[in-house]
Image (cartoon, rainbow, N blue to C red; front, side):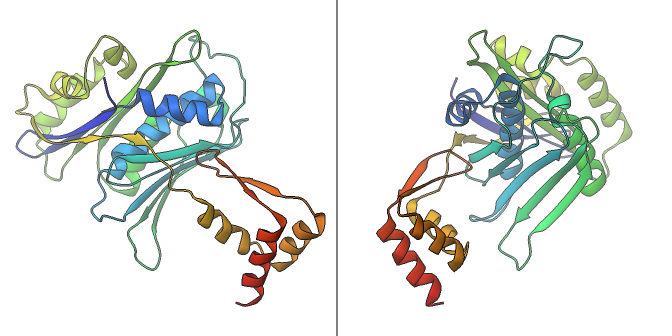
Length: 294
């Protein structure tokens, strides 16, 4: 099954829903960052969530960034997405190793620790919108549910999961976001809550062959579900040598001079995809000229 997500409405527009399968893009991110199993799980959940949230943005150039920072050994994770289905991200400490939790599962919560979740929406205005909440659990899905309830006053149910094979390849990855619109009748809320209570984990449903469409039908099938859009998803970084050069120029003349005095080429890696860019001494000298001419 290719990576994609679907959008739907149900219950006469009182419910909007999103569901995604992201196995291939999480596999690509895992390989790019050489992540440990628990870092893969955290990064995969964040990429899936960001992809769905990014699709809610309206403008062609709008960007959504989802960030968690904690005091655990993972440190944090950042994921950025647009509304075209393109997402990228990275964990702060990709090689962290910790024991499984009491249920024998990858302990994402322990890896992240106590901290904050931030949602940054850049819509081209002077300042981006930033919503921030304390982490409830560090499991990411629960934290997003809490974020939507407190920062956006939108009651939501979020499910996210990444399941690894024994060789650490991705067996299944995906998620859903289901949101109640203003004025939703109590009987619909009660019905939805019962459905959510009895749900299997997202990765179980995906591993059993269910598609994102099937997952939403399973949850909302008796509430007049109507699919409105399907969107292919991919792990895509827009880094290039020019962007990295601009970043180097911005570090300042003093640092550039020190690099030049060292007399050796430097290698700079993109945080998001880990691609390496080499700059020779003469290129650094050109950058210094640009920096001093500003």
